[in-house]
Image (cartoon, rainbow, N blue to C red):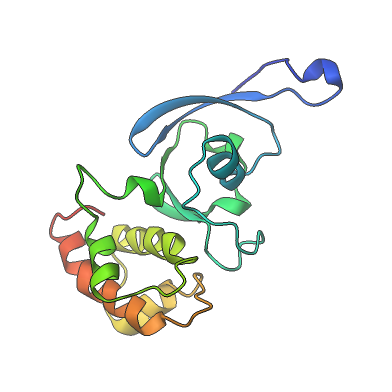
Length: 173
């Protein structure tokens, strides 16, 4: 990370230059040291799929994938992601084809208001990447950091169960 000085003269800490791959595209960005990954995505890059729910890492609405692992973007500073590969819900579909989990969420009607859906999807993709969920109870436990205030858990669980085999068989995850 190299510091730049546009804000240094104003008595503020200097912005930092970071490089990352965002939804498959290399990006070079200037970020303030206090900017969360969520705020970078939503406010600077206009990727509003990841939601600001609780801003305390308790609801999972902001879940994104960093190097294939799910994280709460509200709890991570953007400067900490220098060199990372970040996937948001906007980057799950490929070549006009929905990710198997996105398709399963549609088929199982696994959303109501939709506010938590992007975080649920990214978390489910991370779950598939981890390869640890082999039963309903394990999926339920490993998805417990993602809350749905509408209570669509039954359909979310069914969608994840439906899509996991496709993710494991070489479907994208």
